[in-house]
Length: 197
Image (cartoon, rainbow, N blue to C red; front, side, top):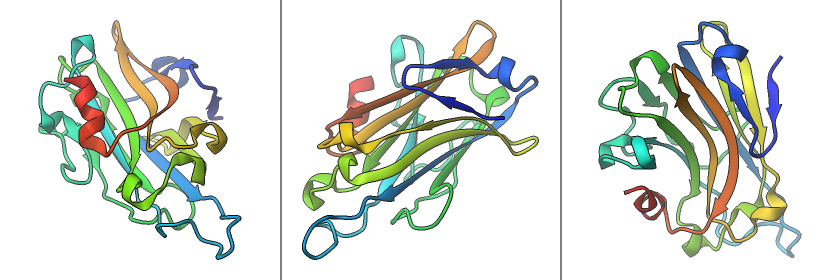
């Protein structure tokens, strides 16, 4: 049975899924219903973009090619693949998925940071306070069993335009996962990734 993580909680992937090699990170969200006169938030559809930042020691990015997102769907190592952009978040289940082969991640990459930002959030006057049922989950691809899930609750994220959802990181010889749930105010992925150079 999957673990429902709380903010700041860490788990060992080796302990929860012995022999784990390939995982799918699924991210999903819904747009909260507006209480406004016309029933829609200003700006219409929400386009949330999931990305992975591949960090070396000291939590730094080596280059832009270590950012996996809708504009760079595959890491040069072949270990991380983004399955594409969902422009609206419509439908049930995962809205965006990222595949990770833990055995092929280069040795100098110590941490994978899973982030989500709202595309053109400032122009559309949108924030994570208007998003509900946001979650990140990790699935073992060998048996399609969910290992862990972290669900966010929108109230505390008013005004935040991006979210650091979770980290998967090396600890000695094993991989662990931590639920982060930190909202930030940035104008897109570029501005967010600047913090890691």
